[in-house]
Length: 181
Image 1 (cartoon, rainbow, N blue to C red):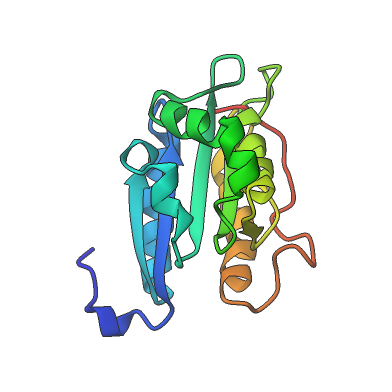
Image 2: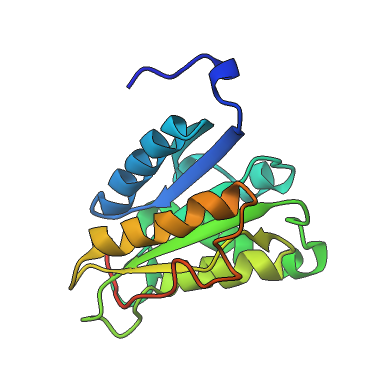
């Protein structure tokens, strides 16, 4: 899909970052970007490895994180540096994300003990660092129907991003079960 000219994106920028091991989160990021553009967002889907925590400190655009859990609760290879940066004790004093608005979808598989750990961690940690969630954490189970889980979560994401409710208040996108990519 060819991007529209900037004036065709009345809702402004939207950044989608993904931590992916097998490509599922990356695929969801690209799907989310296409749908966001159709809805008037100038969305970009970016490998989490390509952004530093410092890059997000002054980010005015809403940020969506699609976070897969790898192995027994570890970050995916492309999320390791962000995970280390965000967990550094210095961040607790800095609270660097005071102006950041975010949403997180966790990819997991209920066959694993640490189901959706990275997404749950990101949702909690960003709030601890001063960011504001725009909607509830979404969780997808790769052992069941992760695509359906993702699509249900997106239904609550759009009104929440647009300030039309639908996120935290009414429980849209409530947690489903799973540990995946």
